[in-house]
Length: 422
Image (tube, rainbow, N blue to C red; front, side):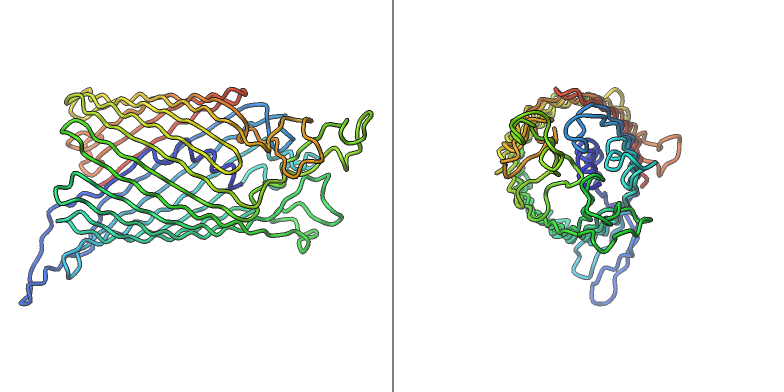
C-alpha cells in the first residue's frame, strides 16, 4: 500500500544521514604518475524502525472506523569507494529496504473474508547510487536507480544529483531531480466490484483479467543553497517543486454521501450513497523550507526548521521544528526535538456522509483535511572512540523515539535503532 508507506516514511526516513569519511590507505604510483586505489569499504548502516498508530477516521471505510496499523521497517546500506585515474573519488551506495505492515483498516476493503488482500503485506525496495566527487573542490555528480514492489503496485525510479561549492567552501548548492514510474493494481471495495472482478490478491485469480492496472508518474526537483554565515551560524533554503500525473485517488477508499442529496427523502440507495474516492489526475506541489543551525558552544547546538507547503488541490501547511542536540560527554549526545504542523485541507475533502454526489471530486481521507499535529521525542547517540561495546568498527549507535498526535484523534509511536559500522 504505497500511500500508507509514504505517510509512515515521513516520520522515520531521514532519521540517520551518514556521510563517507576517507581514511588513509596504502597507494602506489606507476611511471605515468597514476595513483591507483582499490575499492574499499567505507561504512555499513543498518536502520530498523517499529511504528504503531491508532485512530478512528479510516479512509478505507469512508472516514470512520479503525486506523490501527503496525509497520516494521528495515534498511541496509553498504557504501564503498575508490579513486579513478583522474584522482576523483567514486562512491557506490547500495541500499536494500524491507518493510512489513499489518493494517486493520485495510482489512475492511473486504470485511466478509477472513483476511482481505491488503490486511498485511511486505514491501521490498532496493536502490543503487553512484557519485563522483572531487576532494579538492567538494563538487560532486551522481546517478541513482531504484525499484519498489508490493502486492498492489510496483515502482521504477531514477535520479540525478549535483553539488557545487564555492572556493572558500562556505557556500554550497545542491540540485536533485528524480522521477518515479508507478503502476497500481486497482482494488475496489468488495460491495462495489463488478461481477467476477476478484479481490486483487496474488493468490486469487478470479477475474484477474478484469482488474485494471493504472499508471502514476511522479517528477520532483530539489534546489538547496547552504551558507556558512559565521563560525557559529549556518543557514540553508530548500525548494522542492514536484508534479504527479495518473491515478492519484486510492480507489479502495470509500466515500459516503448525504442521503438527502441522493433521493431528497430518507436513506439513499447504495448506488447513490456510496462510491470510491475520486481525485484529479494531476497535482502540483511546492514546499519551501528554511533551516538554521546555531552552534551555541562545544556542548549545545540549536537546529531550527520551518517549511511552507502549497499545492493546486488547495492544501496549505506550515511546519516548524526545533531540535537541540546536547553533548553529555565526548561520545554521548542527547537530542530532544519537537515538530508542529498546521494544515488547511483540500477543497475535495468532507467527513463521512457530508459529500454531495453532484461533486466532481471527493475524498474522506483525513490526511487531506484541515488539521494540526504535534510530534516530539528524543534521540540518544553513542560514538565512543574505541567503538560501541569495545568493537572498533562499530562506530555509532543511535536510538530515537517519538510520539505523534493529530487534532482528529490519530496518534502514533515510533522507535528507531540505527547502527553504523566502519
